[in-house]
Image (tube, rainbow, N blue to C red; front, side, top):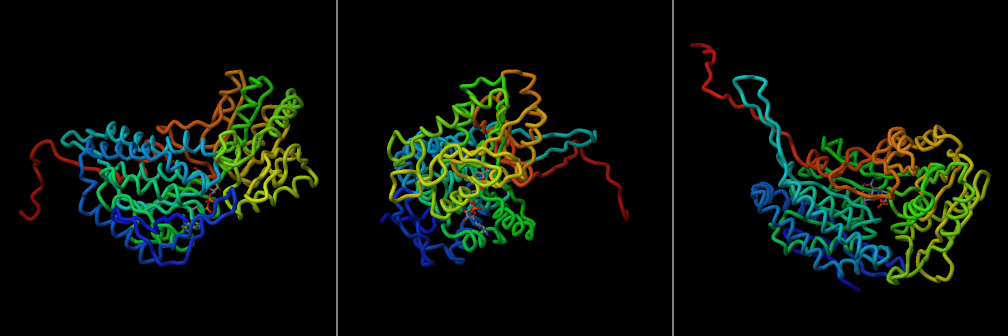
Length: 489
Ligand code: NAD
């Protein structure tokens, strides 16, 4: 079994004595390791380390140019260790190795590079409305950020939180998801050697309700950035709110992928498959409700079903694999729980629908498409978070927008059409934080990424991160010596 530290505090990897957190390889259900949980004392120690670094100014007072150098060195260190990190991540998440090595591992490094560039371009406001004064606005780091990340894409999402928090001079304590802590823990170990002062990036491993809760409620945590499920988001936002801590919530989704009858058929088909089956189907931004216009519905559905049946499910280490196992036992049971209901009134499974063939062990689930009659069906309203698409047919554009927006979620929306007018209307009418037109998901890190309604509060991205991870400070200075009233003279 590999050894993974309980915590990384002051640049040192520590093994705790708390209850064991089992980490399982979802491809074979074998125990990879057990990590003793970070107990209250270790969480407190991690926060104290981050706080002390912040107070001393080891990082916050460094010149922007020096901080940029360190952030770029972090990126280089991740690149240099990418094979190893991807290997560890693969055995813990079941995401195909190639997708991690060529996608999420590179993105992790790029997150540090992006924020290194960003802080070099920051500008600030100067006001001269009052003629005798200059009033300017400074942006200061807030202190110690509490960062809580999920298991579906640990490297890309966890590294985004760390890079965006520290770039502005904050220190942080990261708690990875207990089901998938290995890749992210290794990443945090790797960047410690890149010139970060001790205590800038700390990490604690453990369960959400204990280690995570302690972190969120700690009085020295200045803000909380959370990515995960909507139910957990409510709990964390409530805890943060009780202590008046600002928080960002990146939560669930059930996004509509609208295929209009004048779409480029092949592009829309490829895009729909990528939109639901990437990352083993475990994506907040999945296009999990596919809406097809009636004129092309028969051909499109036939093609979608045929291709879905051919998607290669397999060992995540096999380069030919397109979908690996689901991430853990609980999640496998959750996705499976949608199968029986899928063939009751109002829905029919067209492809997949159950355990993938040929596997004795592992949380393998067949890529699935179900035709659903009404958007109010559970298959269209609940986040399944697996390789499981719900398909609906619509007649008019108005109907498509109504269905798309009839959701308690509002993370992203997709629209496929070769008419610029239709695309312009679609981007306007779909009610979600990000709209992708004629493309599957893409992220421009400058732009905010955040959800409407139960998909979240606040956003990540360049300027959005700047706004969240810094305080605004307004400073007014007279241009000349003032002629002040002489009270009591
Ligand atoms: P989760 O909510 O179960 O857990 C996420 C993290 O929160 C874990 O680290 C967990 O330990 C921690 N946690 C749980 N309870 C806590 C508590 N009381 N206090 C502090 N921390 C606590 O989510 P998950 O199942 O790991 O992730 C899947 C969900 O994340 C899906 O709903 C998905 O849509 C969402 N997600 C959203 C985005 C986005 O950007 N909007 C991105 C990826 C995933």
